[in-house]
Image (spheres, one colour):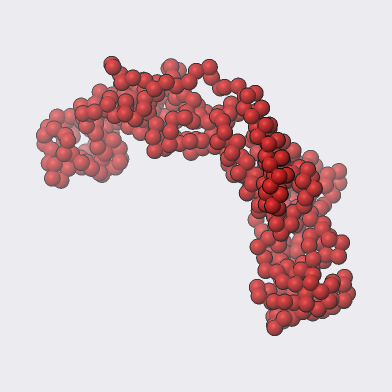
Length: 441
């Protein structure tokens, strides 16, 4: 047996709300409220707050629009509601639970359950199906429309490192519950702030990952992996290796520029075919009036350079393969096996630029990765010491409530636990990069 749950709280966040100005008896078909702004036909209203014993959900009339201060209901109320009771508009009134045998596989609907107004969650008890992966989405039973699916979660239940469990741990230790002040959005936002703060505080061994690229002869720059933690600096790069060779040595930008000084390069302004008699460059002004250029693995001879049009007149027989607009074109550049690298502006730059000998070699970039944002209750954090998230959230909850002293109490616990984890974390390697002196210096 497993109990599956969907949080109701997202249904009312950011929705129009008002309050009763006239008490409502059980079996009432209309209600009188402070304002009908935002209230429309064919939707639903929640009387009260999620989890209150007297809370209930009733559909608004499908054709009679709210007018003045009156909202007409599609069915009579079941419970009585006092003056001042909050009334909130909702787009959905049911939860559909589905299952799949494989992660991301085809979904089969298992049950559709009416949202439980007197609970912050709508639950479903699964007794027979054994598929591992489960999902839920909210349903409008009148219009038969749906929200997008939740993230997948296991039949065994949400793990201790899930968003839902981390939020509940924090609410438990602060004796708090989700409310208009401590909203689901606030808690999720602070969990993402927790992840960012943990990552900012240290380069963690569990953040390391390896991305593979391929050497392209003559290519000057390569994009850093998209999940690199700090892509504008080399601080997130543990090492870069080519095939089975030793790791490249780090150069700062100045050292790299010194090595590249007086080496002419530009890019192709148009595609090149093996039958072409001319090649158009982006800028040929620094190139000799005649000579040779290197594009990828091709050494191409040219007899004239028109610096006004940036067109080289080439010896066709020397174009060995086609090339694409934007490819790097070199002159006076000795292509060779890279031994060094530099990093800036989301790219890494090998030095020397790889020759045809290295073309196709595998590149292994060991780096610290950036964690993906958490987006829903079923998401899980990769932080192994996820349990300290409760202290971060407790700190932020108390500050939001205006309890500075209690907030400082939880802040101190969080910071102490984080420092203990930093001391406990082992580095991924027993070396650090030191900036190399200019080659030959």
